[in-house]
Length: 154
Image (cartoon, rainbow, N blue to C red; front, side):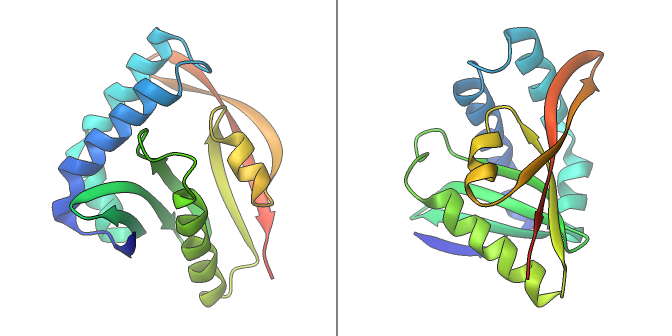
């Protein structure tokens, strides 16, 4: 397993990974209408280019397969964090998270924040985040519950 920086030519694989992960992993926490709305927001190519140009992106790769990725915006906000549905519970999320926290510390950040799905909440709690607020966000008019989470880092 290799961890590397994200590149603009990763977009197609990242979009596929996110869609497949949401469809296969989040169905016990979100209904089909919510999942469809969530996935519909994935196709914004300009947003992906902005993410890969302006955020710190870490990619986990096994051979030619991207097994997970995460992004850090403004030094302390975890914007995206997805693990390929066939590669979950193999320690990839912890490896990627360690890179995020290391980068935040390098930038002298005091805390990390994230808006986390119901599905990802337990992972974030396991790495030391606290849920500070339950939120309802609308995507294409459909309400999705997520959690504002924060972790103090030294």
